[in-house]
Length: 160
Image (tube, rainbow, N blue to C red; front, top):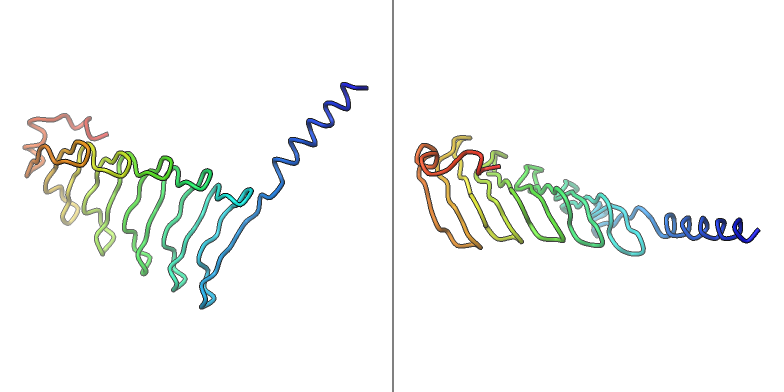
């Protein structure tokens, strides 16, 4: 009997933590347009979220874990053209990030660590690679003005 009661208490405890205060929350601008929407658990953002400009178009979207941006995020201007995208870990930009021009084309992509350039940064014009730079903790240490120059000193596998 004691074993059954213990199991029942454990199940009630688990159920209480798994369902309690897990709600989908929406906020709105004064003009009535949606401002944000996503999952909140115990008043903490968790799971997938979307944020909007005051014109109702999406501004950003991605995942939260304990109120911190995590995983892959997308950011848009007020016309819904993508401006940047990349990975977050504990609210910090990490790994490769892509940055877009006003037409929505990649104009550069950089490796980041805690929001600082750390690794390669590749620049594009009209979808063509125009130059490459290498950074260490935010300081530029090398620049190449063509992809051929880059390949002479580096392996393309370094760009993964």
